[in-house]
Image (cartoon, rainbow, N blue to C red):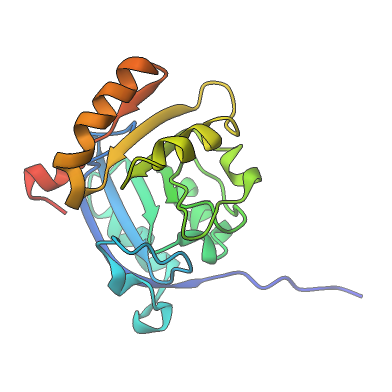
Length: 206
């Protein structure tokens, strides 16, 4: 018996825009952002809480997303959310790669990884712990530091990463003045880590 496997040709899209990657290993590079709707993590300090309800956002055809991106000079695409791995990203990433684009993802790692990526940034959250097998595939581990206990959270997840994974500590925006001095001292004592700042907020860009 032949079995037909359904492919995902539409996805809930909260917003999309061409900008500069503001944080992490690819800071400063031009990138087109696709922010998918839906999140099961629910960080209390999330600055895009309107992304949480997937049903609140229109279902957009993957072909349209690719066209929008190709209408710009963007060489890179960031798939983010919400939590993008709530969706099967196999078809989306295949179409983006076929269009000659580099594909990056920003995820909490709370759901299984689907799709093909050139760069995987995992930012694990205490509100819903990541899957160890997703952390193990990360090219970049980015820990948001909201309080002092997050340093131990960072250490625990760094131990799950593959050799060569870049390690970043990022102060939560609302507590940056309080947390950044602690991060500076931590990185000086543990130089395998780097500091990531949300430079897009300083530049006042999306």
